[in-house]
Length: 415
Image 1 (tube, helix red, strand yellow):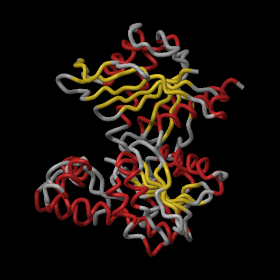
Image 2: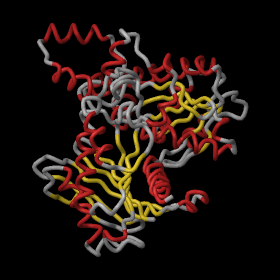
Image 3: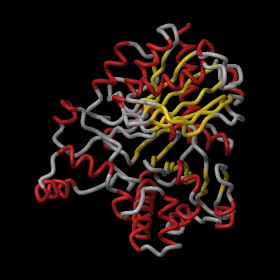
Image 4: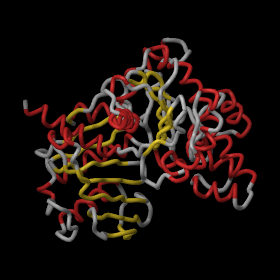
C-alpha cells in the first residue's frame, strides 16, 4: 500500500508517501517514497519543497497558498504531474490511503481510527484544546476527502494516544473535580506518536519485548517533552492540558506559576489572546535569548560569540530537562535508559552532554567521544560501558508510525 502521511500545522503542511503493508511492517521493509513541506500557508506567497526519494525534486518554489486546501492541492498537483518520479506512484490513483497526524481528540477518541463525520466532529469539538493545530488538521482532512474522493480511506492518528495509560493521579490537576467532569481539564500529553515509536525502537535495538521496556524518553526540539515509560507504557509526561506545559521550548515557556501570568495580565493590561501569544510564540529560548529559538543559533551565540543571554537560555533549557528526568527516575523506581530524540535530542551533542553530566548521581555516565562522534541523523548508545543507566540517541519517525496505524485501521475495516 502507498500511504500518504499528512501533518498539517498552523501555517505548514508536511507529508511523506510511505510504501507499507502488514507484511512489510512485520519484516521492517517499509520505504519512504517521497516527502515534502508547504510553508507560509496564509502568507502573501508560500513556499513548496518536495522530492521523490533519491531525486532532486523542487525546493522553495513560490506557490500561492491562502489556505491548507491550496497547500494540499500543490502536493497533489506534484504527485499527479508525471514529473515527480515517485517509485510506484504515477498519479493520485496510486495513493491507497491517507494517515493524518491529529493533535487532539479529547477523551472521546484516543486510538487511531478511520475518519468519518463523527470523528471530524470530535476533532472540531476539541479546537479549544488545540487551537493552533486542530483547525488546520480538519482542513487537511476535508481537502483530502474532496480531492481524492470518499473511496480513499482516511485515518486519524492522535498525539494523545500513547499517554492514555496514565493513572488519574498523574493526569488530574489539583483543581475542583468539577472542572475535570464538566470541562475535561486534565493532562493529555503530546508527542505521543514519537514516544510510542521510540519505545518500540528501543525494544528492537536492545532485543527486548516492548512490555519489558523501562526508559525515560526525551523528545527535544522546538517543541519538547519527556515521557516516563514503565513496562512499555506511559505513566507520566511533561506536556499537559495543552502543549504549553512542561519543558522550556523554542518559543513556549513551559512550566510557570499561573499567578505570574495573572500578574502580567493585570500590570500590562493584556488580553487572553495576547497572553496566549506571549507564552506560545514569544517565550522559551527565543524569549530569554532575544536572538532565536533555533538551538544551532544559540549554541554559536553562547560559545563562539560569548552572548550571556544565549548561554542563560541553554542553561535554563538543560536545567528543566535534568529536573524532569530526575523526577521521573524516582517516580518509576529507576530506569534502564534515557533516550534522546527529536531535532535537538538527535543532533546536539552539546545539550546531551550538558544534561547527562548533571545526572551522575543516577548512575548515568556519558561517553563524550561516542556522544560527539555520533553521525548526524544516526542512532546509537553514547554511555560508557560501566554506566548503570544507559544513554541512547534514537531518531524518531512519527510519519512511519502514522503509516503503520493507517494500514492497521484500513485492514481491520476489511474484516
